[in-house]
Image 1 (tube, one colour):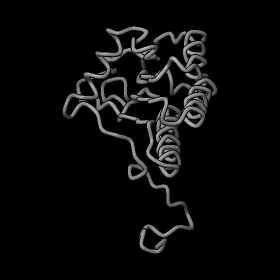
Image 2 (tube, helix red, strand yellow; image 1 turned 90 degrees about the horizontal axis):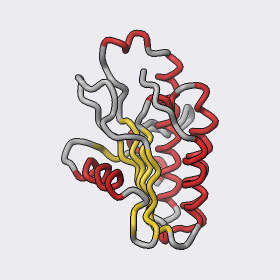
Image 3 (cartoon, one colour; image 1 turned 135 degrees about the vertical axis):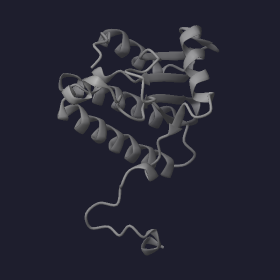
Length: 181
């Protein structure tokens, strides 16, 4: 498992700036497995909440693009990966998909989540974790933002996260959507 140091104070500062009018877009990359560690659960939830709150308050005035992992790496250290990491990965994706469905039901969404596909030989994501803001037409770090946006535009590098990707039906639902019509 990787051990990237996430500067919590810097992330909080950037997330707080989402509420300013000059910020029209945010690019958030959370692909390091550090986000799945139990000690990061509260902060991961804080980031999710900050992004959802900004989206709900600012609506179409703020475009949020997120990149998370599509899959966990497969490699020699997979056997030592904690089961808690696998559970956190599944829970986070389920919550992100459910949130996306709720945000989309309110109208056209400007909050997009892309999942970075790790190939079999990749032990970690090639993108660094970041929160970059488009402030008055300029990215806070243009080079990092452009490299992440290039990955999204690369065919086969990412896939969108949607409500179709996880079972949101629940234990008492019917998997046949026609019952809701």
